[in-house]
Length: 104
Image 1: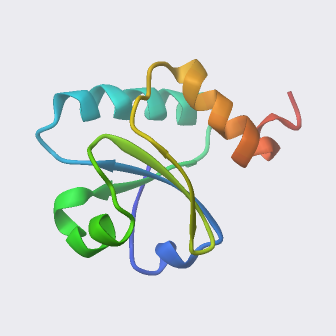
Image 2 (image 1 turned 45 degrees about the horizontal axis):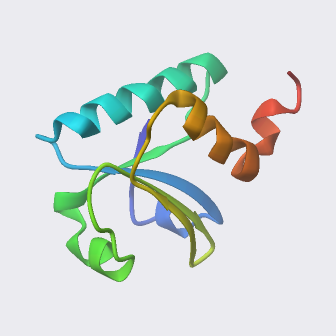
């Protein structure tokens, strides 16, 4: 996973994993995302420590962590608070990152 930067926030499509360091549920969610990335062998998600980006949290109305924020341009497409399973996350990837499945 790549750490978020001000520069990376300018990308067109972003899947941002938002967490806080001492959140147990966030650790479980992160391991799900890391497993997905290891299967595909590429970085798919950006990591954002909510504590370091209070303005971003407020502007995007992030209600809790963990959160998978899917942004296209300046528009928030989805906020996923219940990660549930890797299968559930794959449902979002099929919609927003279909190129991951083009060769499979």
